[in-house]
Image (cartoon, rainbow, N blue to C red; front, side, top):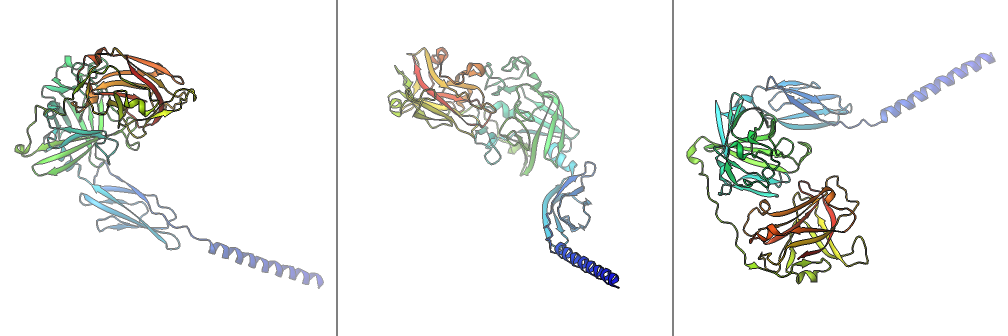
Length: 497
């Protein structure tokens, strides 16, 4: 009996313990919080049926799904496929709940576009001719969509580039794209630098289409190509060697100097009274869109249903700026050791994208004479340190000089991942030339010619400078253009002899 009693006691104890543990863990599981749901989805429009949309659910911690497609229809499927009955813009709302009945929502606007109607907005029933918009700014360059003209305020129909406003870009409903230069072409910067036709309108014939690298680029002249248009994505692609829009050097991912086999760009069309307006953009600054290059090009074209509304092309530019008084100095120098020296040196620095601080320690010898600290400001794509006659700007006659010299110190630890081992020293007319950077006298040093970690004197022959009578600005750029990286360098002893 003792043995049986002990056995029964042990069994009862184990049963009670099991009940206790079960209760304990059950309570613990019941008390654990249920994570809040997160609602999210993406969608894809069918390539064969523009009304059909596939929704992919990326929600988390959800057990139920409720869709409102914005057209008075709903669904509880996790990943529904929905067919709209008409084109339009719809706000789709996804509501999800977790096991604790906590809900979350996510909404997104989608635009359903009839590709034929959108295509006809670009091409018309058969074809549609577009030309640069002749009102206000038709072309500009900036860092992004929020500041589209920061780097270049833009092109206007003011007689400076009349040949661009006469060119025609025709899209045909059958997928054909025709460019007509109408006999004239523009010597675009970055393509024709250093050639006789640089930055001017010239006759559009093959023998004139030799670029800065002596490459024939006549494929950019009048020609017939093809195109595709994706209205849902707002993109178009021109296909065929030399097909272009905007300006020839605008490639898909970066600027180019020779014709490409295709080019893709953003396209948006709005309907105005009597005409349609097409906005073309090439975005080299947004890494989510393209890679390479920098900045946003924006170009506007117009197609008139009422030709009487189209303004005429201005063929002669109104003179810009003023001709400054001449000065023929016997000395020009800046030691950068102090601001006082600048006040006696004929020229002084002016506000520009890069800056200099006078009188800092020599990076190679702190006990030596003071020097200037040159700062290339981060964020500016094209920038330089500018010098002009002080205190009143004048046109400098360089009759008394044959050479210019400057000492530059580029730190050995300079990061050239984005910066370029490159500098320019130049002379330009800022007072009478609206885009002074297109016609300077400029000297370039790059790669191994730019010494690192030691003071180096660079000397420039002024023969071509002396031939000019309109120069009112001297400038120095370090680190190269076409990027926004900053940098710190040192300069001293700018002298003219």
